[in-house]
Image 1: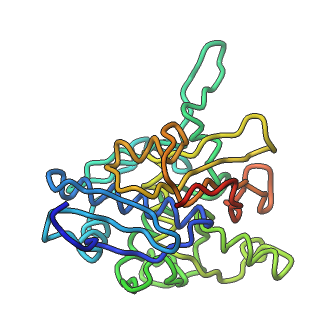
Image 2: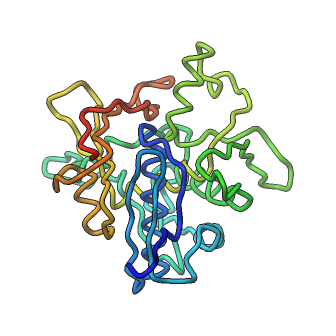
Length: 276
């Protein structure tokens, strides 16, 4: 890299899986916006850095292009879990939560993505993603992952009750534990972190945690790599397929938030530390 300083630096709590995968989402979008600029990403103990040779690259430009990009629901008969297409300038298909038809009418979860899905029932994935994406329009660029706001369904021109997020951000789990119940189940207004909720969905398309089949139920592992890497290599580092210097490997689960299929990402615990 010719630049002595990172192009973008974002404060991040690497033990919050939502924040971690949101950084991966920013990494993905930057790589698609500036494909010839040698975009590299790296995690430090308290922040995520993005390096690029492009002088045009900035967090403001990434989020502006993200908010303005069109979202197409690819299966009009499935309002709950349809694959999505994020339009120009990104041209990105989002379908990591999908299962495919297998033999004997079985449903096959490719790559463990379906096990990460947190929404079901009356929660409509395309609808939530659009609202969280649009809410990134006025985010505080100094603390994008920590800017919380109430996100409303304003269809018809009148604000209604707040919309429940995907629950990728682990702070949602901690809020429920602190007050003893889920605010969503009581139809209370809820605060969300739009950048985390929308961009984690982007990041999980390429950067996938490992599913621990031998450990506790719904347990996942991800590694916060600590060497500047391009996305094609970093995706292998996240899943532990390419051992390297890191800020640690973290384990999180998906506790229930009011039903068998309604879940959330928990706070992650450090498995081991290889950061030196």
